[in-house]
Image 1 (cartoon, helix red, strand yellow):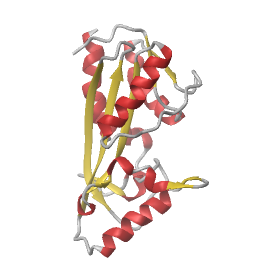
Image 2 (tube, one colour; image 1 turned 30 degrees about the vertical axis):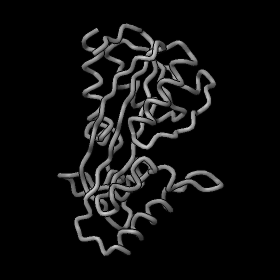
Image 3 (cartoon, one colour; image 1 turned 180 degrees about the vertical axis):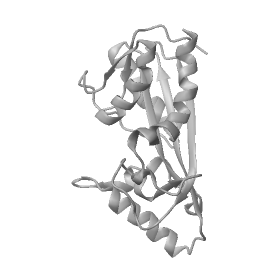
Image 4 (cartoon, one colour; image 1 turned 90 degrees about the vertical axis):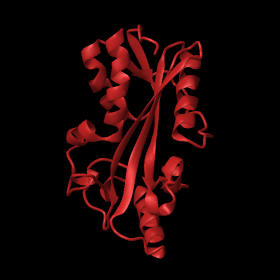
Length: 203
């Protein structure tokens, strides 16, 4: 595994919340984080069919454009009874001409489960893949998972995306009802970051 020796990391995202989460995790290593937005980078088209594919596309595009090591993530929810859909199309299910509508996406997931008469508990997992790419084309991949189930009706107004219908294993509340920082400690992204951090600890 390649050591991380730079003091600056580009986080390939335009999402301020995601940048803040990642920055907080890396503060203790003395690493400065900047974002795609800071460098006016366009969002590359995510043409991959797996989380790894899409994370790599974003990380390599950012590293190549800036000459900085770049970290990108691709994440989504897989619902067992739907054949692991929406998976890499998690955000696509929410796309509308006026932006993303995750209430619509959650309703679609529920409707499809009901149409299948899927038994309860309706097992699901959030997946996160992190890709750390260097300008020379090298990359390291880290994957995290949070198991749980999807529930209905939607509960809570915290978090984002499908959080209001995802109840993590071992909890009786949804991600949508959970304090943001508490969720960040146990989430699929946190699981992937535990693995990523070992790379910074080597440096």
